Image (cartoon, rainbow, N blue to C red; front, side, top):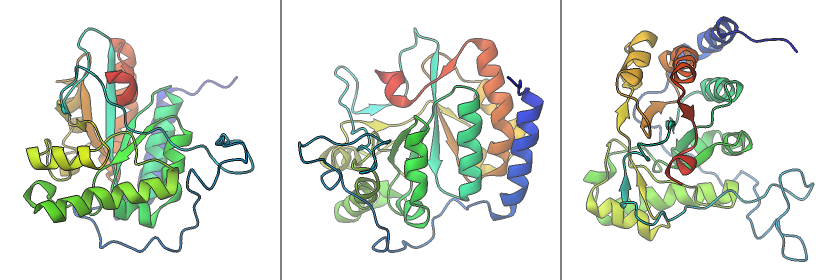
Length: 272
């Protein structure tokens, strides 16, 4: 077996980042693109005559993605997991260039890490194949609103449309509304948005206790430092697809988590 060293991984990721760094996605999203031309199966469409849903290896189509779970004893808005287990959750806001997303997912998988992707609906419209790519890698996939606007500042009707718009796209692409909801343009959801998310099928809102600040493009060393200075057992970390600094920082970040004995798992695994 050929051993891949951390330096090999860094070189590969730097090459991938160089291809797409010029197209790093800004914090705001582009206008929604119609998804009516995307041919996908619902969970019901892909059931066999005996009512079972085929698994991902079946010619009839992939199984439905996991649905949101209620965690008894947990608050409606979850900031971190248990502090007595050496596990953390790296969460990525799903937007930006698909090449960066694939590079980050691939690097996580090479480390044996699993992450949580909170997808923007317009991003799913533009890159529908990435929904299944996330799930096929064993990662969590959730909802980060349809257009990545300030959902807390919206009226009830507008915020409902943002949450359900992304949920509908996730359901069409995967058979589920996803495992988590996170508000856009805010670390925490307002009480109204928490209630609307619950109405849309999300028992909990996923927040975080560690902010990488990678969206400010501070440089890869700063991204790594922002995370490692604050991360501890049970932490939920906010990161983003679409930024070259994040791609460059991830190998060193994962190496240090390994050194500290912190296992990167999905948010569902962390809370459960």
